Amino acid sequence: MPNFESIFNAFVTILVTIDPPGLAPLFLAVTRGMSRDQRHQVSIRASIIGFCVMALFAVAGASILSVFGITLPAFRVAGGFLLFFIAFEMVFEKRQDRKEKISDVAITRDHIHNIAAFPLAIPLIAGPGAISATVLLSGSFQGWAAQATLVGIILVCLLATYLVFVLAERIDGLLGQTGRSILTRLLGVILAALAVQFVADGVRALATA
Image (cartoon, rainbow, N blue to C red):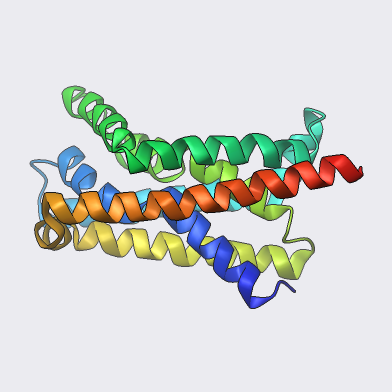
């Protein structure tokens, strides 16, 4: 079983890459014009789909990599660089601009009926960064008990995301533009440090292989 530090680091990594507070205004944007009940249904479905996608990669991430002949240390290095790039975007507020462009596309396509799957679940919740982080973490959670723990961590993070969606209007008003900017930058710095650790561990594993 993983120790408390590993569990806590996994929780922080997944939560930061999903970035629930940053999704709050985007959720309001893509559900514009909907009633409270309709938004509630969308939030439930988006959270469930996002959880299923990330749980799949948590359990079968290593198997998926092996099909393509990719070792976990190599993916750890590549994923670490990707997470660092995401952290860079968060610190300099480029990631929010990219997410808003994705949400704008969904808004202009009125014929898309299921916005819970796209763009909320994929790629806003279970995006490249969150999926990469999940696969990277799966390498440290070997065995059924450890994998169940990782899936449980993902479940907690998705429950937090669901709560953010439910309270989106209040959270967006409470944080304001300044609050969102500060929180995004703070989470970006934390993610950058975790990304460097991923790269260091991957390089060490490749060097000793």
